[in-house]
Image (tube, rainbow, N blue to C red; front, side, top):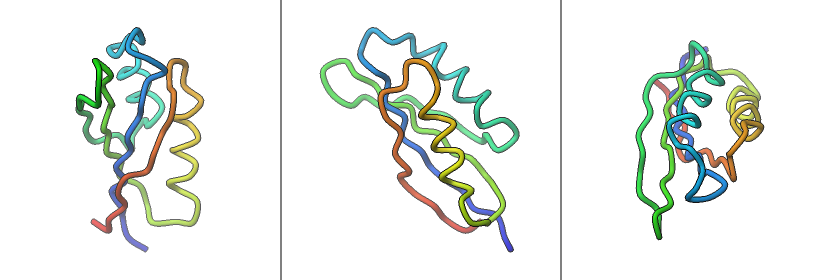
Length: 86
């Protein structure tokens, strides 16, 4: 069993969502798995949050984190963009 790096794209509910608060919530939700976070412009003032988490390679690991991120206030959608063995 190894470690995987998972990249998530978190889209806020809208352009009026407080991204600073959302970024802090993302960091907290990922806990010790959190590695990096970056804002990416999407369109018409909307910005996505790209975040990377490192977890053990186990069944259902990425789904659990994706669900935790989806349940955060202000999150419109969460997509797993990349999963790679580290």
